[in-house]
Length: 361
Image (cartoon, rainbow, N blue to C red; front, side):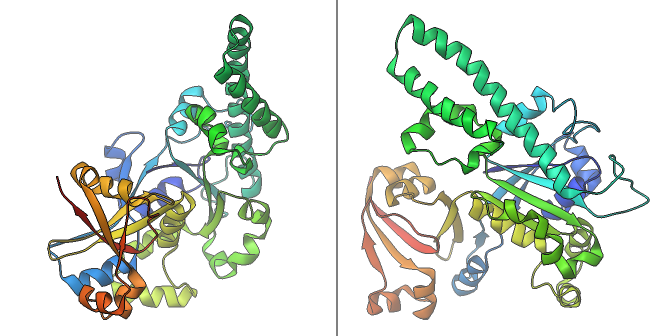
């Protein structure tokens, strides 16, 4: 899963990318203008299972972050983003937008005033306009094709696009539009920007960390939207936290009244917002978290591990993480308690399932 990290100039985007990935600015720059890094998804369940099984290898779930090239001054509130830039954003599965909420006389805001809500609205409007432009262009082609030959699929696609256009003209992103599964399929190839899950990271002043709820109040309309989340953090503090040893980290968090680094919350929330979940395979060789979409059936989950397991699928032995821990951390005890179940191909895998696939090829 790929997350595109984007933000207006001097918003702290690069600092946040470093805090999330552990890459220094120099290391990130060495990867090119749009560095990519794979980030581990924090999950205490993986750590606990590794303590129990003491495997040779522990593999958490991961997400890929790409820091997009900076938005040039002036873009986002006049002139618009380049098509090349927007095209690269469309390849992402979700967007992480960093907006500036801190004041710093040494680093003046390009627009001469700090207004994170304004910056969010400007960027989101560019996404809406980009989607509208794509729809209008497709309209021209579809109407010609339908006039020449009434293809049923083209007619249905045009009808869905008309609904999307009306929604966008009301200045509402497509991620708020509920479509039927067959309608989703018709427009999936467009990869509309305003349809992608959106995480807004408000880069706060250090002094505002303790009053995050008050500072983020203006973002309530976004926080309440479907497929959208708003998180407050200080990219500068997150960088400092990453460099601290464990004992000092706990003291630092306590001083700021924080239970865990915001980067951990951001990564975990991104995972959830994208409709992803983890199931686990365990044993002396490896404890591993596997990433699948919510609603994935057991047969497809088996295929995530290996095509042979999917092809030769017989049954899935399943126990929830909570039941496993309650059973003393042994499969034998879970079998005795009746919490270890046998499931078939159509079983919808749930977050936290520990699964052993029986198969024969």
